[in-house]
Image (cartoon, rainbow, N blue to C red; front, top):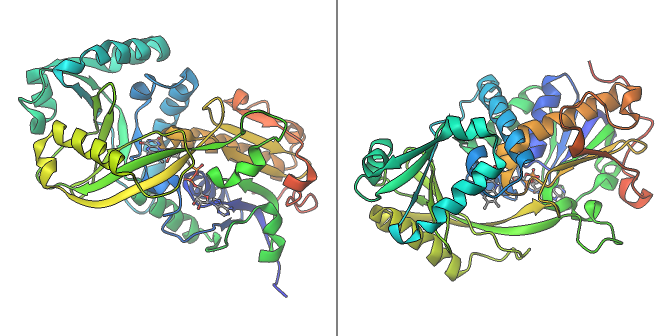
Length: 399
Ligand SMILES: Cc1cc2nc3c(=O)[nH]c(=O)nc-3n(C[C@H](O)[C@H](O)[C@H](O)COP(=O)(O)OP(=O)(O)OC[C@H]3O[C@@H](n4cnc5c(N)ncnc54)[C@H](O)[C@@H]3O)c2cc1C
C-alpha cells in the first residue's frame, strides 16, 4: 500500500500556470506537491513551445482590454520575480518592431486602429513610435534598407520560456517541493492512489482539464484547444535583437530571438485540436515569411517544428474557478497570452488558495480584496468533477 503524504496544496500540471503557482506557494511557506503527466522538461506543455513574447500593446490589436491590463501588471511581476530566481533567465524589454512589405500597408491602419481602440491611450502615446526606413535600420541594423517604414512598440518584453520553466521548477524544488513525474492523465481523483493528500487542489492542467471546464448543457465547450505551430531555427547570420512582427493579410508572423542565435518563428492559429505534426503548408508559410523578412533565414538550420494547442475559453479570457466545498481551484484559458498574463492570473489564484488554507471565511465565496474579481468565479461542481478535494485536510496550514 502507498504511504500517504500530506501537503497544503497539490498542483496538477507542471506547465506555465503550475510552475508559477508552485513557486509562489512554496515561497510563501506552503508544502506543495506538483504532479505532472509528463517529465520535468515540460515538453508536453504549450509553455514549452511558445515564443514567450510579453507584448501587451501588440496583443491589444487582437485582444480585449482585460488582457492588456493583466499583461501590464504581469510584466511588472516578471521583472521582479525573475530577479528572485537563483538561475538567470533571459528577459528583455527592448520593444517589438513591426514591419510590413509595401504592398501590405493597408494592414497597418487596421493594426494601429485596433490598438488605439483597445489599449489605454497613455500606453499608445508612451510606446507607439512610427519609424521611417532609417529608423528601422537604427532599431534593427539587420533590417537596414529592407523596409521603408515600421513601428516600434517601445518597452514590450520577451523572455526565454524554457529557461523560465527550468528556473521556476529548480527553485521550488530547492524550497522542498515534492514532484511526481510521469503520473499519466490524472485528475484530482487520482491523488489518493498516488499517496497524496492535500488541503487544496490547484488544477493547472491547461487543455488537459477540458472535461472539468465543460458543461454538457452548453453549446460550446467551456475549454477548447487552438492549434498553434512554430518553427525553432538556429540562424547565427541574422542578428535580430528584439521580436519582429511582419504584418501580412494572410501570413502575419512574428520572429522572437532567443539566446544563442535561436529564433522562434510563429505562429499559426488554427481552430482545431489536431495534435499531429506540422503541415507542409504551415512550414512553408512560416519559413517563407521569415525568409522574406531577412534572406539569411535561408541558411538557418531548422531545429524543431512544434505543434501545441492553446487552452482557450469561449470568451478567450482567463478564468479561475473556486469550488469551496471540495477545495478545488482551477486556473485556465490562458490562450495565446499565457506568458504575458500568467503572473497576475496565478497570483490571484494563489491568493484564493491561501484564503482557503487559512480558513478565511471570506473565501467562502471569492475573497473581495482580489484585484481581478471578474476573473474569479465561485462554483459548486458536480461530485464527479470535484470529488478529488479533501474537505477535512485544510485550514490554517499556511504560515
Ligand atoms: C505556438 C504557441 C505560441 C505561443 N506564444 C506565446 C507568446 O509569445 N506569448 C504568450 O504570452 N503566450 C504564448 N503562448 C501561450 C502560452 O504558451 C499558453 O497560454 C500557456 O502555456 C498555457 O499555460 P497552462 O499552464 O494553462 O498550460 P500548459 O503550459 O500547456 O501546461 C499544462 C501542463 O499540464 C500538464 N497536463 C495536462 N493534462 C494533464 C493531466 N491530466 N495530468 C497531469 N498533467 C497534465 C501538461 O503536460 C502540461 O505540462 C503560445 C502558445 C502556443 C501553443
